[in-house]
Structures are given as C-alpha cells and as structure tokens.
Image (cartoon, rainbow, N blue to C red; front, side, top):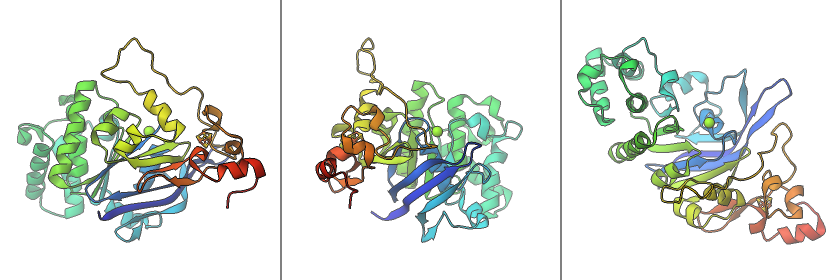
Length: 336
Ligand code: SF4
Ligand code: MG
C-alpha cells in the first residue's frame, strides 16, 4: 500500500507558567492510501495534540513542534511555511472536531459555509461551488440538499450538524481526513450512523482517515490499524485484530477491559485502570505507565522501554516483551 503520511518522532511542547510540558514525546506512525488508522488513549495522552500538529493548528503562543517529521507528498509538514500550509488545509488534509456548534458559524447559512472552502481553494464561480455543495450534502446523507443549503445551524439536529462538518471537510476532496472524537457528543444511535457514514465515504471517495478517539467501540468498527497512546507516546500499534485479540501492552489490556460492552451484563462493574497518568512537566525516567502497571519490573522504573517488533506489523514498547530486560535488571546498565 502506498504511504500517504509518515509521522516520525513527532515531539510537541506546550508553554506554561510552570515551564514547558512535553505533550507529545516522539510519536511515529504511517497512514497508507485508503486506510483508516485510529489513535486511542485517555484524555490528555496527546492524541488531539498529535492531530492538531499534523494540521499545524497549535497556536504559537500555546505550543510548538519541537522535533520530528511529518512527511506528506514529499514535504515535511513540520517545516512547511504557513502560507503553503494554509493551502494544504481543507484541500489536502481536513479535520473535523467533536463539537459542530463551536466549529460552524450560526449566523451564516450552511450553503455559504460549505461554498467558502470551494471558492477559496478551487477559485470556481458560485454556480459551480453551489453544484459541488449540493453534491457533498447528498454524499453525507442530507436529503433535499438544495433547500437545506439555505438553512442555518439551529435548523439541524446534532447528528445532521456533524454530517455538515464532514461535508465541509470533504468538499475539496482531501487525501486525508482527521476526525477528532467525531461522535463523542452524540447519542448512541446517532454515533452508529455517523460511523457508518465514515465507512460509506471512504468507500466512495477513497479518503484516508485518522480517527482520534477514546472509544474502543468506534475503533473496532472502523479502524484497519490502531495506535495506542499513553503519556505522549505510542505504546502499542498493530492491525485492529491484533490489538483487540492479542494485546501485549499492559495499558492496552487495561483499556480493553475497561471498555463498555453492549453484550455484557450491565451489573458487572467496568474495571477502569486505577491511578492517573504521570505529570508531563517532569516525565518519569522509565516507563510512563510504571506507577499504574501491575507487572512493573525494576528495569521499568529506570529505563524507558523501546519498541519491540512482535509480528510483521505489531509493535509494543514494554519491557515485558524486550529480551534485554533481564540483563538490565541484573546489570543496571543503559540499553544499547
Ligand atoms: Fe509495565 Fe514495565 Fe511494560 Fe511499562 S515497561 S508497561 S511498567 S511492564
Ligand atoms: Mg482530545
């Protein structure tokens, strides 16, 4: 499969009064043409920051990319001048957010908001922009698109608003669609419809999707491959079946066992992972999960685990899987 986006060692730091926070600490993954990858993890793990960094949407006064590359079409997005990046946003890489209410303008008709991107990127006349806007509303499953174009945000339900966001993101036929918790604010039935819509869209347009979510149900439905993030790092990645049926990182196992199951007895309590993620002002020297990990070894607290390749596509960063752990535990030396 053709590589579309290669994120390699991405590091993002936030400025705060107390000093810099390492929100993303060396994240790497590849997105291939036509596939859906998921980035999962608890809130604060750096998944949204990673997504926003790809779009270069982190305001300079808040934080910045301090390391790594993001290769797309032979260009490093981390280094791209803002002017070129502006051209890229919407036309090549699009992003949708959790809450349509804060992303869409309530005082401008839906049609104008959809057409704005078309006119800006394609420099076509209004009549052509309108034709494309009608077409895209149809694609996202909104009936009577011609009359709907004249309406305003308050005339649409939550699920419909999310469909409009998706329409705006897709209207210029981007290669990549990044969706940050796109179903979190919706009720369960609508969630399922929106997830189905992503699948339909991918089938019809071939767009590659990066799905940012904390919801493993969404991941199971839609993702080809999964990256599990914890404390600013990817701790395990692999094909969706491997992650669900053969998880190897204790954090991934914890996430899976805390997942609400539709088929489960509602009276059995969920088992969320006890404890909280580490303070990223001063990340621990060793594995960031050590304080919450029931399997932690001595070596875990002293040295960061490195990637161990399990199958051709399954990678985990955990000392339990690293043959060097034993040697380090006895000799207390740095991994080489
Ligand atoms: Fe647990 Fe050690 Fe693996 Fe970290 S490296 S997840 S502490 S076993
Ligand atoms: Mg988030």
